[in-house]
Length: 475
Ligand SMILES: [Cu+2]
Image 1 (cartoon, rainbow, N blue to C red):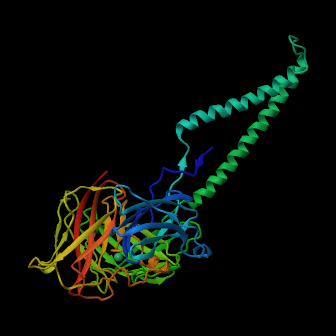
Image 2 (tube, rainbow, N blue to C red):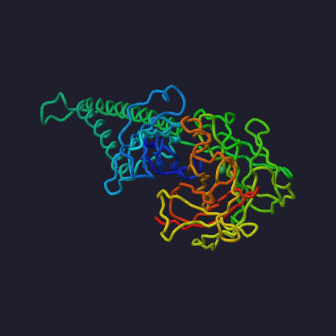
Image 3 (tube, rainbow, N blue to C red):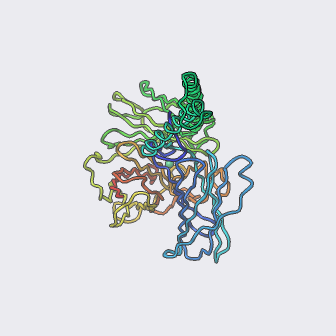
């Protein structure tokens, strides 16, 4: 009998962003700048832990409430919960929220303070990523107990049939003994039948739950000369579709291609939809080798997915990169300096990671800040928007189990932010496309200890620059 319960531990969570389930968001609730972290539950229904840090000290009260992004539930908000203010850090608030069903949710954060009220909604994908097999100890106790109960019932029925109507001390005759054996055999059959039915019912329930457990989209990648054809395949998770994609920062798919195992070159490409659930990318010149593919897409519900694949490519003559497509290089990841804070770019420019001296810890939200310097060592003055944003960063673990595509507003796709409505597509990032600050920041937290490579991309002087950095993350 396969025993399965609706809480925790045995598969690796893989979804929108790969292996990086926490949601990090930075943005404005009215006049207040907030950094919001939502630690999503591993099973649904489940409790999401919400952490909110206000950048200013003038916040008096924070209320939080979960709502579906679409459907009737989106219009009827339950009464918001008051977030608890930390006693040690008066700008830090925490709360817990139930997410009741799988899908696209938002956490609405309502702030009150000396500058009046303000609200902001943070999109949160809710999905079950795990199933818990019954613990071994519990199994070792419960199975013998069940057998004891079943055996007990059979012997009680046998003893009853054999001796219940006899005076104490009188031996049962042969007929009674035979009748008792028959009764015991029938009881054993009935008990075994009941246990079988119970197991069937349980497995049915477990199977139902199993269908809820998130399965990432599969990416079938077929090289074809200078082209790469990518087909999205749904393994059949709930009612997900592969033809309901919406553009996220101008493109239906953002494809990261990383050269393996050195991770010494990355491409950020934007394949074209050429048939149902099928994308085609004209490849740039690429050396023969093995490549990891991470294709970020967003469904119409605001639900993000990352489809992954690994492919072997022959040397590709390729076409020059066009439009928003870009590439960058770094040193081989094996033995890379995890304390390096400067990446040398083209034309003598430098990207500086303002990382400070303290160690990085897993599951901790950080503001990753990067400064672009010109050859004279001064802040660059010619930064532009790259696909509507000040910058794009990918946080990737060399084993490919973590991949997160992050923006200055956080891990949330821009398309989902637009769906939740109170975020104007041009708020939170710059409206003018030139004269941007030389510094760009990304809110993010690593899901687990280990080593990570960061690919940070900005646009300046009409071309896209990529800074490559490495981080060692402690527990
Ligand atoms: Cu991006």
